[in-house]
Length: 181
Picture 1 (cartoon, helix red, strand yellow):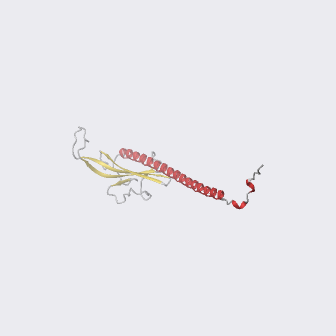
Picture 2 (picture 1 turned 90 degrees about the horizontal axis):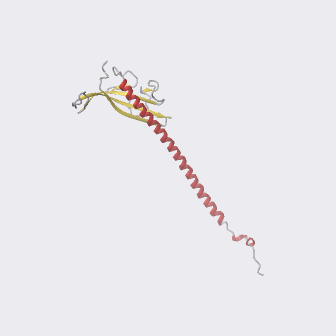
Picture 3 (picture 1 turned 60 degrees about the vertical axis):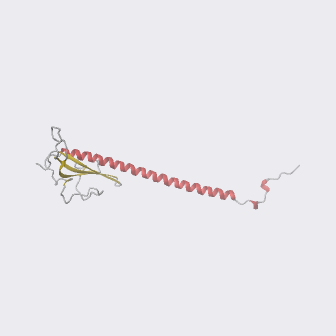
């Protein structure tokens, strides 16, 4: 009867540890892939959060613009540039409305207009009379070239946690003269 030799009886000099080296390399590759996936996920969460803040700031600026248009429509009497947030087209102190920092300018915010959010504000600039060619502003419905309307540039701004700022600007017109008492 033949003797079956046990594999554990082999001399240890033939084992070179190849399985250990291969498993360590695979573990290193899997660790690098895992760290990369975690960094990617963290970046995506950060981007999603910023998009939410930007969207909230945009909604706030749109709300402020709507409030500003109602405010402009409801303002009766002379348009006075002595009121915070009111500017005339020729004002030298007129703000550069495309800048995100309005700290040096007078604007109307939540303290003056109750419908605004805490970080929403707007300014109204009276641009003067504007001629609308071919408009039909008269009651008869016929278009009379040269009808004039009073134009306002309304700029609203909303900030969200100091990280997202949105500025929206529109031109608003109305018929009656705001400079008349």
